[in-house]
Image (cartoon, rainbow, N blue to C red):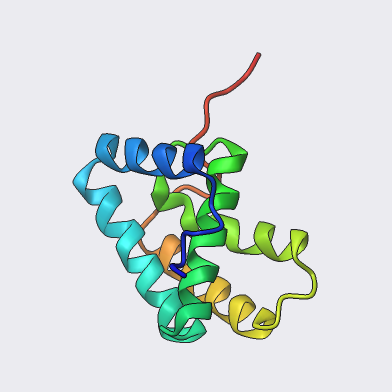
Length: 115
């Protein structure tokens, strides 16, 4: 079973649509954050599933940029308090937050403002 098997088809399509619309620089930021996360969480199936689940949380919240990945690790943990790799996820979140600060990335998700 692949890492994205539990993500519904609508969210998968949203991920692809968002990826296609992203600037190359944002794609690079996204890849860097996922690489940092996997270096701590592990590149085994569970690490890959965590990436997919964090992305699912990002899409569910309405973010329109996958480079917001690092902003959603903590939100995922709030929803999944019994996560077995919680310590590793918190560590990755801290490292990715420093990466985001260093690269002057937004601290709020790229979402449409609803009035």
